[in-house]
Length: 80
Image (cartoon, rainbow, N blue to C red):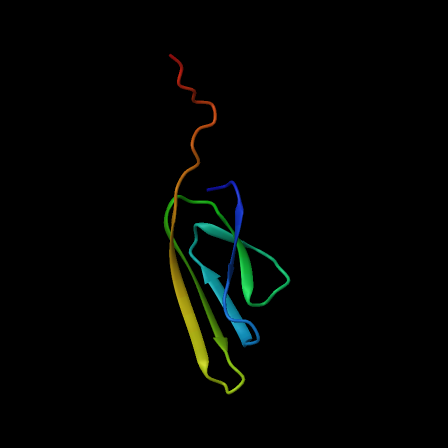
C-alpha cells in the first residue's frame, strides 16, 4: 500500500479496452492499452476489471480481487 505501482495486463491485440478499479486505488496513465499501472491507496479487499472486444466483435472481460496489506512501520525495531 502506497509503496509501489503494480502493472496488470490482459490479452493483447483486442480493442475498446475499458479498465476500472475500486476506489482504493489510482490508475497511472500508461502506453499499452492492454495493461494498466495501479497505485493502491487503501488497505483491504480491492478489485480491478477490464472489458474488451476481439476482431469478431465478441466481448471479453475479467475481474481480479486484490487484498492490499499495509506497509510495515519502518521505524519499529526489535532489540534485545
